Image 1 (spheres, helix red, strand yellow):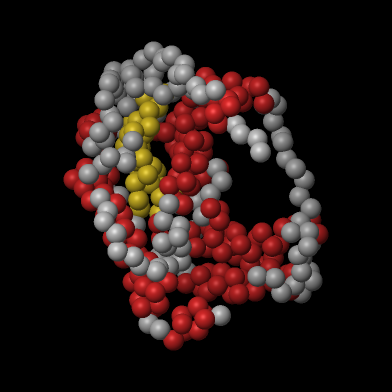
Image 2 (tube, helix red, strand yellow; image 1 turned 90 degrees about the vertical axis):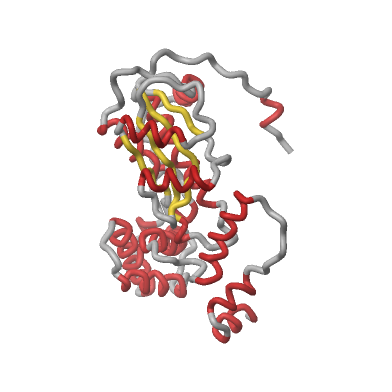
Length: 307
């Protein structure tokens, strides 16, 4: 393909510039900041890998694993991807659980090439090892509320916050990259300063924990996947919000889309959030001081459409 030929012949920065198909546009200041970061990452560096070994290992391991799980698998499948996975493992930038998992996947792929892989790896049983009915689950969804008023003299425990945030990587994520990163504080003054950076943080009372829900951008294929991290972070934190309610706590998601440069820089400074982590939104979590009424909902015909 012409694309592969150009990639070999041209310097990486020039190839990436052509690949992005740049256009001149008039954009807002907020959008300009986002585009500037994407251009910097996608033009001057590898569009698929910019230092997040964990995310890249999971991405390429996931692509190999999909083929291994297929009932139609055969030797020779995904060889270039497996070679890239092996290269990433050889980097050994840091030991992590993702590296252990990726090594297992690569070993299974090697077994497949030798016709040694067990049939059991593609004949998995469907697991539903719980007694939760669909009605009970729907009741949990409907019972959960956005709460803005919390008790004054007590905040959630570290154990509860940890349990809430651990739930975030059990949601689906693109290529199983699990790029969500949750920066949080239980410190009352620090939480207050962080909350103050959000324009939507009004009509709030009581003590609360503060969580900045971010995603590591370094393993996304840019610019095409520039919004994928927002999806991954949102899917992940929905799990957390349900866990909040299951623990008898309350939470409020704070809109971050209106943040200006000063607010963005201040929050990053307060929580020491690195440049490669993009802030998706923020959340406050506290012990409820009362509840909230059920909000009005759309008619089902407005959001369930059969074709």
